[in-house]
Amino acid sequence: MRLGISYHENVNNWATASLLDTMKKKGHDAVPIRLADMGAEIPSRFIHIDDDVTNLAGIIVRTIGFGTGDQITFRISLLEQFEDAGIYVMNPAYSFRRAKDKYATLTALHKNGIAVPKTFIGENLEAAMEFVEEVGDVVIKPLIGARGLGSIRAKHEELTYRAMKFVHQLGQVLYVQQMIDKPDRDIRAFVIGGELVGAMYRYLPEDDDDEWRTNVHGGGRAEAASLSAEYEECAVKTAEVLQLDYTGVDILESKNGPVVIEANASPSWSALSRVTGLDVADMIVDHLVEKAKR
Image 1 (tube, rainbow, N blue to C red):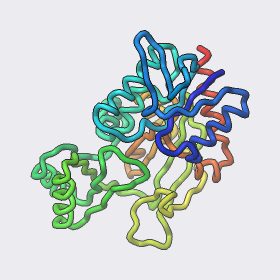
Image 2 (image 1 turned 90 degrees about the horizontal axis):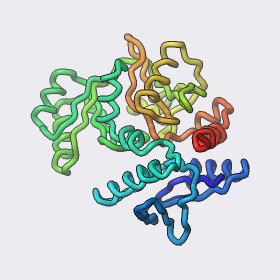
Image 3 (image 1 turned 180 degrees about the vertical axis):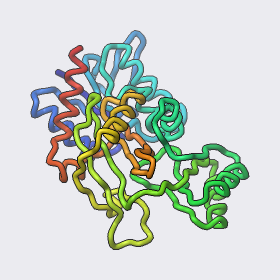
Image 4 (image 1 turned 135 degrees about the horizontal axis):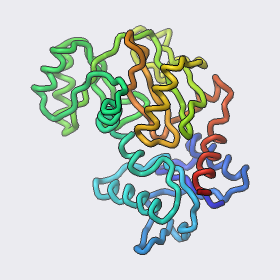
């Protein structure tokens, strides 16, 4: 079977490389595809540099890359045309785009009864400050981002205002989220094909009292987790609502139960594999092959 995987600048990124290696080990023709190097024709024909990839059975979307509004629009539409041509796209184009947008993610989850933090999204600085005055301790996040990069926790009202004013002056949308009272950890639950395949706790760094993020790449400690039925159901339902074939769901343990802050459409799994022993790349490729055969 001929299978693709999208990348942007670094085809040797460990997640991309592990998926390509797994495809090859399973006997598939693995094709790395940079969407910026793609051309499409109507009726459906797809050219990657000088290679006709119209005969792909499926493609794993790891990234659509950076670009202008026109470029991003083209790449999303390209993935949709892949789908129309019978090429299985994982995660699907619309699902991938929505999961990358924290606003759209939280809206969909809340609509379907999944608890999310109280959040302000908009371009009105005064309204954002009113929100902060109402809820107190907040985190200012980029609307589209990953690994906690660019997030600012702001406890002091004056510093909060300055941070939000700076974001506003840069022409960015304000995304301000109430801090949830929780233990010194959060949960990353990994769902593939509608099933929870593994989970881990991510603890705050022990040697940094000022750090509030649990991201492992930033010094957080990972530990295998066995989730209760309530938390497992929350993770699986999140993937179902967002229609993601595979996802890492980030869940907080609030006093009222699970609260979802994000569902990653192109999650990493190095820490999860290390603490659980799971071969996540193998499971992702198997799921793509199963879908592509239908």
